[in-house]
Length: 243
Length: 100
Image 1 (spheres, one colour):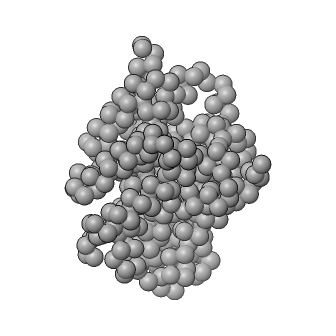
Image 2: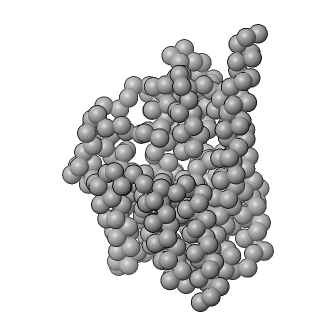
Image 3: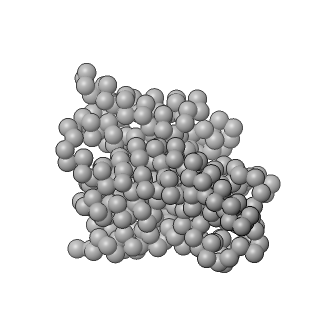
C-alpha cells in the first residue's frame, strides 16, 4: 500500500510541475500550427503530428519538408537532425534510471523526453521516476497538441499582421535555447554566429539556394557540426547535456 | 503526391527511436570524442540555421523580423524564460507592423 501511495504522490507531483509547462507549450505550439497550416495539414492531422512527436524544432523542420513535398527519406533525415539532441538527453536520463526499471517503463517514459520534461525530471533527486514523467506529460502534452490544432484553425481566421507576429514566436523560442549557453561558452557563440551567416549566404548562393529549405538545413547542419567537432572537440569531462 | 499520414508516421517513428534507443538498447554512454562533439554541436547549429534568415523572412516586412531577432536575442542573452522571449518577439513584430 505504501508503494501505491508513493507512486500516487509522484504522479500528482509531476502533474503539478507539468502544468506551467503546458501553458508555455500552448502558446508555442499555436505558432507551430501556423507553420502546419502552411504545409496544408488539417487541424486533426496537426493534432496527431504534435501528439506523436512533441518536438518544436523537429515538427517545424518536418512541416517545412512537408510543405516542400519532400521525399520520405528527406523528411526522415530532417527529423533526425532537428531532434538529435534528444539522443543526448536520453543518454543522460538513462544514467539516472533504476538499473532494474522495466522495459515497458523505459519505452513509456522515452516517448515524453522533451526539453522541458527532461529538465524537470532530471532535476528531481534520486532515480528518475517514470510515474513522475507520466504525471508531467498528462498536464502538458495535451496543450501542445491542442495548441497546434487551434493554430491551424486560426491561421485561416486571424488578420495577416497577427499571423506574421505569431510566426516569429517559434524563432524566439529557438533563440532562448541557443543563446544563453553562449554567454559561458565562447566557442558556441562563434558557432551560432557562423551558422547564421552561412545559412544566410547559402540561401543566396546559386546552387544552394535552389535546394528546399529543409534540405539546406540538413546539409548545413551536418557540414558545420562536423567541422566544429574536428576543429574544437569538446573536452571529455565537459557535461554533455546539463539541463 | 505523398500521403500525409505516412509523413506523420515517419516524424513519429524517427523521433521515438531517437528518444528510446539510449534508454533501452544502447545504455552505455558515448565515448567516441568526435561523435560526442558532433552531437553536442548539432542542436546549436541546426536551430541557428533554422532561425536565420527564416525569422527575417517570416514577417510581412523584413524590418520587423529583424527587430524581433534583435529584441529576442537580447532577451535570451539576459536570461529571460523561453515563453517571455517568444512573447517579446511577437510583440515587437505586432507593434512595428501596426505603425509602419
